[in-house]
Image 1 (cartoon, rainbow, N blue to C red):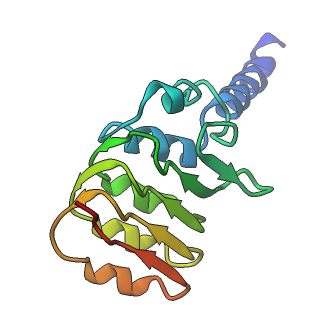
Image 2: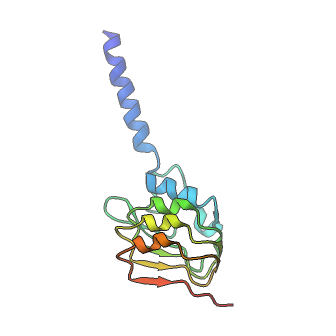
Image 3: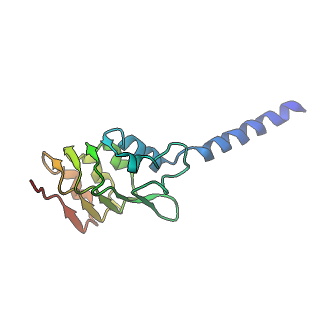
Length: 149
């Protein structure tokens, strides 16, 4: 009789463990923060122990807890934008303007093809060409890349 319960117990703990883990959008943001150095005013709320990143500073989500906006403008962010940005498939708005971000625009940004509407990377220290994959952003209505020195 006891052997009958083991599969159910295992299934229960598998379900509980998966419901406590961070969503894929949250994992993408944490991976992104490895290259983007976030000030403590932002990173203090970014925790792998959360189920979703929807309460994190600079992050907004839709009703399904998918990240739709990342606004870290004028937040003293430094570093480079990693390829993980391409995993945020529901991203509508990306505001990273007026920071100390350097390097090139990752081609993976072009993976946010369905929803990306506004992209502002201006007043940073970006270099290189605009990736051809940015042409995949068919709904892009605002693109700001200007540099002020």
